[in-house]
Image: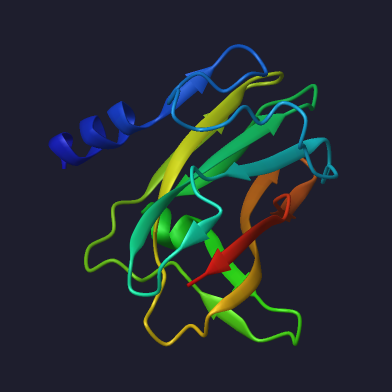
Length: 160
């Protein structure tokens, strides 16, 4: 149990400024923030806008707490914590995150004015038809006002 908590702690990166610096290969997300939910935002980015069916990748997610109080999130495994989906113009939806075999639960606090960045492993299944899609992520958080769900900014992705 002690090792799992240490690994989880090491995988969390707290950021002090608006520009994402945790992984320089990802584009800056400072200009693409979505609407707020209770003054909290979730923004995502990727390194590629064109991906092949059957490939795997990573989506960078940043949660920004713009409230005057701390918020809490449960970390159970990034493929559970975040729901990452692709939707085409006809409305067909594909879930890109999978269920892990083992789960460690931790309560993580994001202080007022701070950000938390995560990388989310995704798989673009071979069942996904080629074409243009909108990639989005969502997840829950809690504050003194209750439990909330936030959606990310949309990203345009082409599947080949």
